[in-house]
Each structure stands twice: as C-alpha cells, then as structure tokens.
Length: 308
Length: 294
View (cartoon, rainbow over the protein chains, first blue to last red):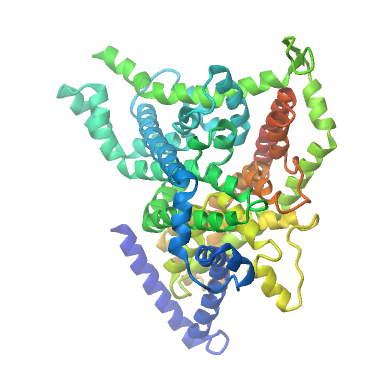
C-alpha cells in the first residue's frame, strides 16, 4: 500500500520536474528522448559484458570438440546439443547426475536445516529474556565476520580426527549453520512476533515449543524464504569446503566434479565438449531460480540492510 | 510453567548454538592452538612416531619469512585496492541509472546483471578460463582480427583477468543491495530535492549517495573479506597460466602448506594471519568511514 503511493508520488514528481525543465531551461538540457536512448545504450553495453560469457557457453555446448577449435565461437555450427547433453549424462556411468543430486542434497538439505535452526535461535533471542542473551548474540555476530575459508582448514583437521572427512556429513554439518540467517531471524522475529500473542497462546495452554512451531514459524515465513535462498546459493556455490573434505568422487558436488573434468582437457580433448556441456546444464536450474525468485532477494535484502 | 519458560529459549537455541560452536568457534580455537604447535616426525615418513610440542611463534616466523607468502599478501592487497573500488563505483552507477527510470527495460537489465551471481565462482572461472585461452577463445580471436594481441594469462595481466572474473560474478549481487537501499529512500526526500531545484546529477551526489552509504560500506567490507579469501579463480586459471604458482594468493598458500607439504603448523598460522588481516582491514575501513561521519 505505502509502496504504491510512493511510486505515484515519484511519478507525479517526475512529470512536474519535466514541466519545470521545459518551461525554464529549454535548450539547456538534452531532450528526454535522447537521454533515454543514451542511458539505455550504456546499459545494453554493460548487459553484453554480463551476458556474453553465458551466451558463449550456450553456443559452445552445442559443438563437438573439433568445432570448438575451428568454428567461430560466437555462432552455431553443426548443432549437436542433444548429443552433448546425452554424453554429459552418460559419461562414467552417469557420474554427472550423481554430482548434481549431491549438490541438491548439500544445498537443499543444508539450507532447509540451517533455516529451521536459525529460525528457532533467532526466535528465542527475540521472544525471551534470559541471562547470556547478549553474549550469544555478540558471539554469533562475530562469526559473520570470520572468513569461511579460515575455518575450513582447521575444521578438516578436527573432522579427520573424528573420522568424519570424506562423508556427506563433513559437508552438511558446516552447512547447517547460518550466522547471517540467525541474525536476520532475530531482527525479523523482533518486529513481527507480538509479545501479546505469545502470552495469550500460553494462557490457552499451548507449550513454548508449540507456540514457536505454530505461530512463530508462520509469522517469520518471509524472512525464512530469504534465509533459505541465501544459504542454498551459498552452499551450491561453495567450492573450498568440499574440495578440502572430499576425496571420493561419488560424494562430489557439481562444482568439484566440473573442475575435475576441466583439469583433464589437456590430456583428453573430449573433455572440452563434456566440460562446456556440463557447465551449461549446471547453470540452467540456478539461473531460472534466480530470475523467478528475484522479488524475494530484493525484499530480504532490504530487510537486512534497513534494520541491520 | 515458569520452568518451561526458562528452559524454552535454551532448547530453541541449542541446535544452532551447538553447531555454531562445532563449526565456527572450535575451528578458530583449534587453528590458533595448531599455529603454536610444532609437529616432529621421527623417521622418514613419521613411521617412528609423531610428537607435538609448543613452538611459540616459530610457525608465524616461518610463514612470514616465506617470500612467496608475503608476496601473495602484497598481491591480494594490490588486487583489492584496484578491484574493490572499481566494482563499487560500477555498482553504484548501475544502480543509480536503473533507479533513475531514464532507461528502457530496467527489470531486464537488473536480471541480466544479477544472473552471474547464480553461477558458482569456480564455474565462472572455468568459463572465463576458456574465454582467455588463445586458439580457443572467440574473444581473443575477435580482438586479433582488429590487430590486438591480448595476453590475458601473462605474468603482468593474469591478476587483472582474475579481477575481471570476480567483478563479473559479484557486481550484480552488490548492485541489488544498493538498489534495495535506494528503494527505501522515502518519496518526500525526492520531493524536497525537486522543490530545491536539484537536477539528476545533483540529486545523485547530494541526496542518494549519502543515503546509500550504509549499503556501499557493507558491500565494501564483504568485498575486502572476499579478496583475502581468493582461491578458486587462481586455482582454476593455474592450468592455463604458467604465471600462477601454488602460493599465488594467501589462501592458496595455506592450502598448499596443508595438503602438498603437510605442514599443518604453518598452514594454521597462515589461516590465522588471513583471518586477522580480514578483521583488521574491515575494522580499519569501518573506522575511517565513521570518522568522516562525525
């Protein structure tokens, strides 16, 4: 409601600005149409910078290794996309599909659990008063600033003593923790969960955990979507942690697998074909996710930057 | 009933807190401990037993006495001094242009700039490693046709080729943060600026820039931390560029100490130094920024 009215304000402000300009400063400023074309042209150039590599991989994924070297990289020649995709999926008994499923498991499972834990923790800090509350908050806030790679190495050493390295858990356990999500949930729960509602639910005889699960989670839903998305993309994009933890190819996420393929192109040229095809297949689902869910990214970021 | 209310916050907190302790706090403590420990292997491969002892600052002295490691720190500092400001300026200009409603198709552009963020950094590096490769890259070929012979992978240029990958991958994400903050500026502010007769440049400089400063500061701090952690880009480009060695960035050096030389003490010291550097740099930057405020 308020955002629509702001938009209307801004539009009327914009049109009256134009009037002022045309009556008082005619000739001194460029006509709006020219300005619009100029700005659009600049933005098109920048868009080309961001999109050309993606376009190239789409073209490259349709070619044989031989054509990759001999034909114009920016245009199609002897399109064989289906064959390439088929060989990506078929290579080495379908290892690529397995990597894909692993990435989904790490990112999906990790983000789901991380969101639930962050929601419970953030809710607890926002709704209850207890000793040690500020210590907990300060501690976690410090964790946001610790570089992830600085903890990955010692984590590997600890996990190797526990015999946890080279297992699904070695990648999943660190993925279950999102200090940023905890922070966002704390801020969000503080502003949307009313104390009176918690109190009246208690009077109705609901237990504390039940109140969190029935009211808390539902009210925090918009923030939870954001936390889930951030954590999902964070885990999906992570390379350093699985690189350190995993030796068994069967446990690799897609990032690790593709680097493995990329490293073999010098000895076995058919890996050019496999790698470009694999890169294309791997970016399609996430690209769709990013574009479809753009709205949620924006909403969540505003939440974090305004209140944080 | 009161008891339940006292226990509840800890029950709700415990899963998060336990995992946080296990995967954030303990590793930090462990790394610091390891960095002060010397491991001696008896026999050629340690087959006659391994003993650990307190080593004081030996590991730090060895890490900082290694010209390759010190060089790698200098390299990422140079990288950060150039790449971070360039990206932040680019991001700010793009966000202001998109929000000024003076172009066609703003939502298309927003999506196009944000798209690379959905591509993992290491996949982006694979992609660009192909686009830098002479004899394979259509970009190198096209530039060759107009008489240029760019060398994206040489000793003097590969650092900036990495900077390009990082900018390409993260600019759109940072732009969204800035746009989010631009959208939160109330309409009355624009109204007041208009009444004062501010033109679009004046509006951007005196009204919008000060108001989006928190977002810019946040993006800069995270970029500084990210710069110190550079790893995937040089690791992938290493296969096509002889100018990149196994200690090209501090993080790469720590990785090599741990997994190639099996020197865990030095690796831990290097990891601690990276974390401390990230802390000091972000903190210094925040201090400078807030001093200018007062």
